[in-house]
Image 1 (cartoon, rainbow, N blue to C red):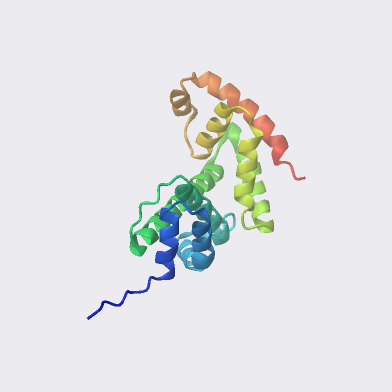
Image 2: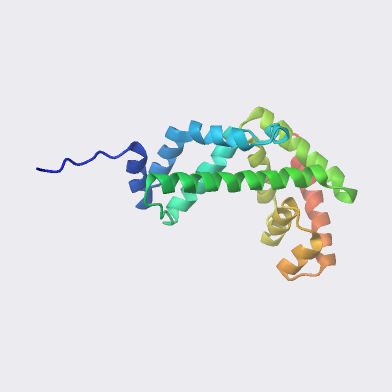
Length: 195
């Protein structure tokens, strides 16, 4: 008796494209199944963080990260279940990154507190206008810094890394990192002013 070929699911068809490096397949996957991913995000996003980062903004981050993954030829998922596992892992990591930034800005004390509160205010304001507003503010802040070391210092500060650890990571003295941080804050204060 001849074997009847089984039809593939829409996810499996997209997975085949993604495994071959087709970034449009990744975009279609996010477009087609975004609501399922957003439900997962909403279930995990803490209420206080929802004021700054909404599920659509996090979904945009997931889409960009999946696109990078597919574009770099790293798609190794062999089944629909493995693809969903990967997408949910990317989602978890995006949420963790957002939570770190949120906690960092909320808990900053001493001389960095006014800067952190101003940054947090801009994130809140940007999120009220656009689902990807908060991420755009962070991206704008990073792009405003032309020196890659300054961008690393800001990224490490946002992830709550102490200046002493940042200095070790960058092979610099703590005083050099603190001096650069002062210049970074001054530059970003101007950038964070409402347009």
